[in-house]
Length: 159
Image (cartoon, rainbow, N blue to C red; front, side, top):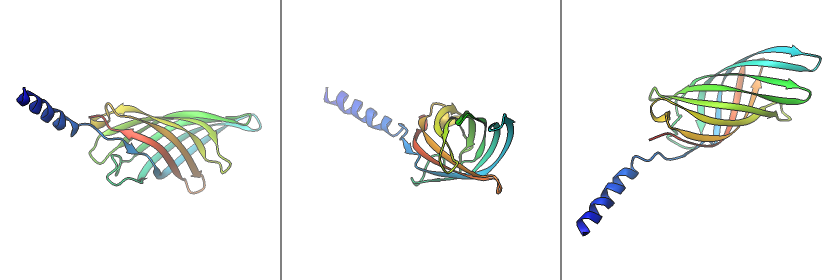
């Protein structure tokens, strides 16, 4: 009986090493962006956005997205004082695996940053069964063609 208990306890402890740990998404990402505005009436627009994420600067050392980069694309509608939209991102990490993320724009800050929510959608390798969600605030400099995206939340690669 004791041998069975010890053996099952050892198996349990060995499986703990394979459980993926949640990583904080506290940090920022910088890159380049291009937007094409299509005017709608006198004060509205729909903007097609294409961004290239180049530098994940996360608070945690050894973050699973350290060294990741990749494109994001989507659209934002600004009409009647409301801002909405969304899109998708495909980040390739340092291991060559891709994390897919969707985002929903829900507003705009006083400084002009797009704000909203992000959610993991899967991917390849460790990202296939990843889970995560949080918020973002993305401030662009249209003249320079750059952006800084501040992130919150958690992400857990699949095991």
